[in-house]
Image (cartoon, helix red, strand yellow):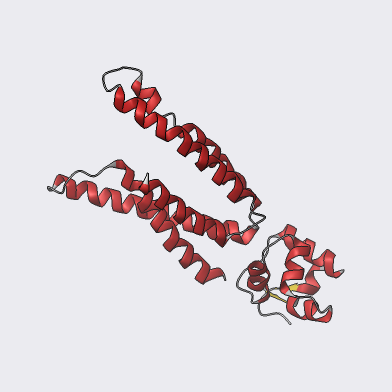
Length: 142
Length: 66
């Protein structure tokens, strides 16, 4: 949960960067509130039924509200002006390629004996690189 | 490309924010166009020309021409 809140605050900084009419912020907050509302009972139910076969579909239920966050995110991109879209695209391209470099590097290191890491780390890496990519793109265009 | 957006805006005593709102873009985008860091798309360039009631080639010129 703390990880999710941390990731959300990084996202929030991004939102303010391209601050539009606040519609995206409202849509995102609504999706995150719904996510939190589904998450808590899901954890309780899954933990109490560790042997039930149906725990797997239940475990991913909190992702449903996040699908709305994804669509809000896409709509937010569409509302950006052309230069903002270009900066965002360069930032995403940097994050996409950079994440590949880092995860592939870690894969080799893991082969050499580094400890296994949780998949969850991939997205914070991408978000961090996105922030750096955004700063680099802004230096070029703004 | 070079452009005379800053001059045209100053003639009308508009702020970057005012122009940005008229064109539905951000103030930073107007600044990037004025400082020639960013060349606008053709639709945005036409929108600018229409707003200032000037032919597009009078506002935007390729580098190295008068």
